[in-house]
Length: 81
Image 1 (cartoon, rainbow, N blue to C red):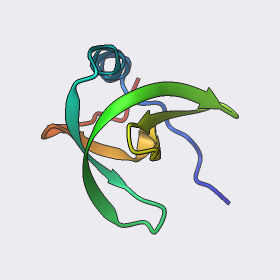
Image 2 (image 1 turned 180 degrees about the horizontal axis):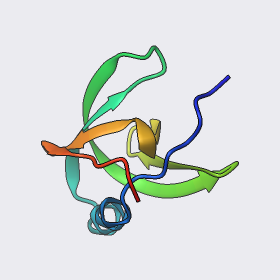
Image 3 (image 1 turned 135 degrees about the vertical axis):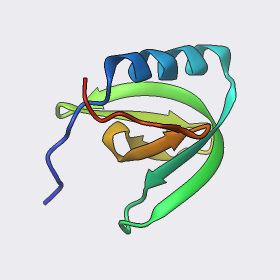
């Protein structure tokens, strides 16, 4: 069973939207499916919700739960909205 989703800070969500619109390359550090930290350089192509959980999609097809993101371009994510 998946862990309960915890929304990210609203300002960080807005920043993700802006980066997606600009098609700007970012470095994301996140917890992957194997519960390990993973870092990728990518362009955010979409932000979406499914079953009350928010995700982002990258240009290489990765889909990442927003509450699994630890850092974006060395900015630590605040887990509170």
